[in-house]
Picture 1 (cartoon, rainbow, N blue to C red):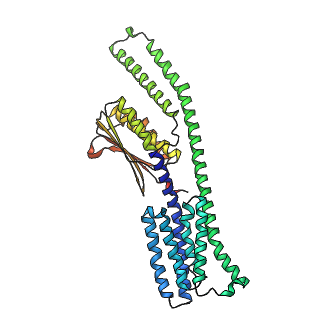
Picture 2 (cartoon, rainbow, N blue to C red):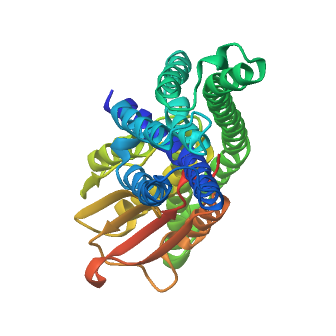
Length: 389
């Protein structure tokens, strides 16, 4: 349940980050348009004050919404923001105010953050409040209701907020469905590829290794000298270890991630390795929801690093640290063992595979000494998923 809440919160934050860019662009444009119109043609004595209020409120409101993530999700903050913008319309004394476009920008976050059925009423509410503001201004004469052109203009002003809210809400739903469909497509493609590789390992490579083991086992050990006996025993030992590694790889390939968080999977893997080894493994922190392909490769890199540390590092403690920062995400596995030999640990193939996985998902993998120069540290730097729609 905690993992689901974390995923939901991460997705919500991701959507807010994407739509905030639209809010920033439209608000800056609306503020610039209003200021230019007020400077170009002075209408009331309050124009200098309105220019000052706009120049102050625009950066302050955007800064608060950017720095305080909770504010982006608070209806009370949206309401204050909208009332402030409509207050500028009221101070201007004309319902056809240059601040009308500025006021419409306050609908961006409600329309893209609320569920569809709640977003549309929010737009209707905005139109209602704007209608009251229009009645309170000095330039809405009674003949407006009998003049066709004036009436059409007023109706357009009242209807546009509903159109804006509906369009943004619908776009948000479509983008979410597109993201879900793309994630499902990636998951199915990844699962199919994993199954294919598992079949090939099990039906081909594993059977060949097993056959080689049987042939070597059938050799006449008595006809070998001590050196030959040692080489044969070593070869048999390596084949047994290779078979065990293949069985582990096949089992992991046939076990789908099913959209589970990377930190949850790593905690399970840490528990399994702790029972099978002598090292204590601690997992700290969480990562946001990742695309299926990225999550799969990140987990496999971390799982390979954990397995290598347990098998080769002769360590007493392994620490897995997961961190999410605005600049990107970081996953680090550090042990207090003997460190890596000059030629790399585990024969080099595992390390090449880890680097290849990192390159596939656009991540950066660094393998080097652990904290204080002791042991080994495997650090994976992941780009934040918020960078793509």
